[in-house]
Length: 284
Image 1 (spheres, one colour):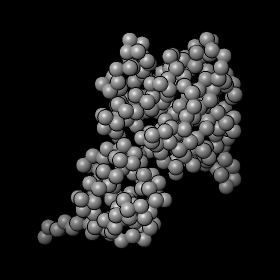
Image 2 (cartoon, one colour):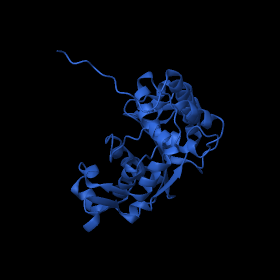
Image 3 (cartoon, rainbow, N blue to C red):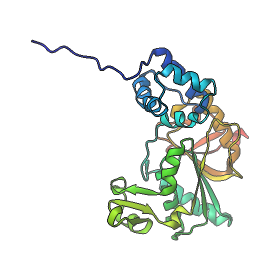
């Protein structure tokens, strides 16, 4: 006798209207455009928030958010819906170009070089940038300052701690492991911590790319905005890129993700290399 399929009964009712409300709120709050296919992901992540707050329905949870009855919950709501996929030296072709760029700029300008990593996640990207800077100048104290930001406060805490399971470093060369990490012992066996010198190169800050004001000063020699724009619609991408341009020094490079193309969004940039952009002086 054939078995009948049974549907899993959800703990909370989650209607299409609830999903559309979530889509509108996260777009307004963080610029993220959720696809129709993300409905189950949204349920899974926000169901945890309902349990944590003791609220029994999505409708009530969203009502309370919109009515301002849970101002502190906005941060957790945003954190829950933020995707943080990252790894050390992800999109490895960018880092040799960064190394060449840093050494070339330093020959012309003796001031410290500044880099902004605009989607720091759990820290692998800014620490990869820091390691590249150390290799460029062959010292653990290179003339480089890195600002690493993210909208998600949870991942920033992990990034600031700089402690990772060894399996996260399985593709890192033995030389880099020896030079840039301290292996845990005893109760901390199987973990690794970035060296204090590397950690000192990075300043972590919370920043929402949609916020009216960004807590940043001066211009940068390089900006990393990789695999972020794919979550924004075209008008939002255009707005953010228009705000990047004044923050770029004339020689600055802007690093994008492998599936992102900024040429269709901004005429102020031109392609320098594979998903790497520079200012286009012709548009000035």
